[in-house]
Image (cartoon, rainbow, N blue to C red; front, side):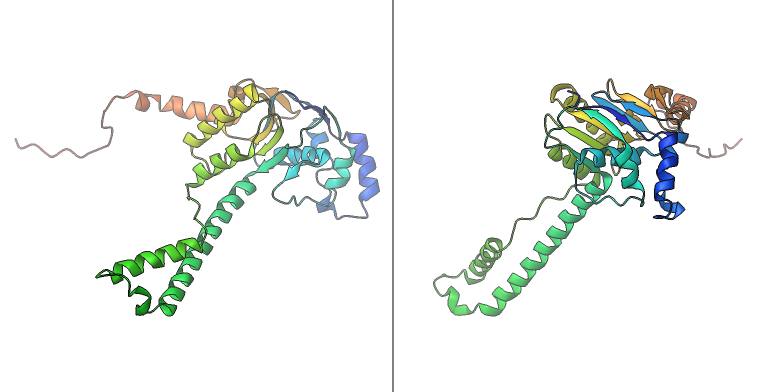
Length: 295
């Protein structure tokens, strides 16, 4: 299902008029993204079920997601902290869409890290609470509390203490690795029949979890009526089946096959150069000094 069809950015003439309008309101450093996408000759984005913005740092892929999220008024977890002119620029952008589902939202790597941090903070608070209750129990209890127990006072006291503490504290959330937590976060947040903007979802994930995330996102798009717009430079996410990839490293911005992207080809060239090492079967390739043989 495609909920967002098209997104039109500000053209060069509109950029000039906008600068005249806001130049006294902001310093020049706060004009971004005015003029940025026009210089890249990116005027319009046509979306598929999965659309990917690819590019290096500073290529504008996260800015595009935030502009779309602002224009659609999507729910977000982390606050957006744009430059001064961001909202003026966003007002001039245009879009064509069907009714956007209520559950649609933008999810960022900051959201993942906050989720991990919040879990650890909550668990630390539970640990501290348990310690306080244990001290309270030890201070307030006395031997007369255990007169009814025969020859097992110490064991019984420990059991009662544990029961008392557990009744008065929450259960800790299980803590996973950062990669596991990130994958669980997206699986918990992404539901059927919604539009999701994902900003570098691969952050903190090893290749194993990036591969699992790719499979999950493919399923969401193919079978769960989700539309996905993703900013990434992960080769695993880029290879999502039938994804439309915009290369923001190019001027003008082009629609490219993921395996034609320059930086992805660097991976290919690197592994191709060392291909013989991957094809060796149980061969020790480490360099060792051989002992001298006596003649």
